[in-house]
Length: 339
Image (cartoon, one colour):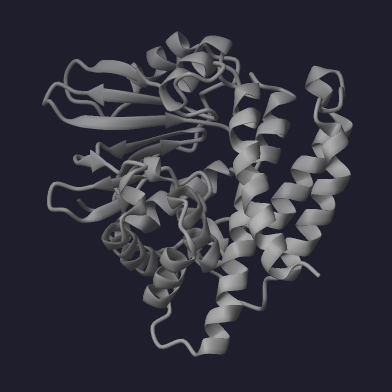
């Protein structure tokens, strides 16, 4: 499918809109053929997603979101287009401020269990390397993302609170001094690098096997120039990779490494894995300060039930789930490398 989307620069969607108001706007968009059906797809915690089927039975995905945290909507749109140019994602069909439409990606989603399969890890890395060597496909300005800066920003906000909810500090504010020390130590482990085009959210839910078996990536909210080892480490974190699997993945990404280079890269991967866990913890702490910035309580609840069945259907439920994994990753790093 060619990269030839309809671009409308007029800002229409409002953060205060209900899902019903958003659907009413979607129905007015100029790209549909015949009557359309619109179904809200739950799962995301920071944007609204809808599946649309038009009069020709063509399916599309509508994503509605606003600048927040590390996400900048203009960068998201360009990352979607760049990924499609590289054969790594569906085509962008339409975009306006805070709303974009892509072709529906046929295929089967990656499962958490599959991510622990060495053959699948190698397949993910092969596609990841296409992405990381694909900066030439980025034609417009996108973000630059440094995870340690993001974590520090979350911690600053958790300390002061947000004006929208009365500047009340986070319920977990007592953790902030320790987290800042950890961020500094993990950041110091990362050496000089060449920024690459990166996805920055390498969770299984953002990977789809096309009918031909090829892997593609979706959800470009975190797309940016960044460190390629972050993508590798975050993928390994979700795979709960042991040292053997981690060394295998590194050798596949960097064939022909010397023993010294392998040890240096291994330290960086372990540092990034711990940072990935801490980023999830602190992002949730920060989100909880204004949990309904865009989505309604009912939408948050539906998404939580789908993504984390059995947990409390609210953002606070994520902390109890994520925190033990972060502490495990931090302990792993500390026992190996802390003085």
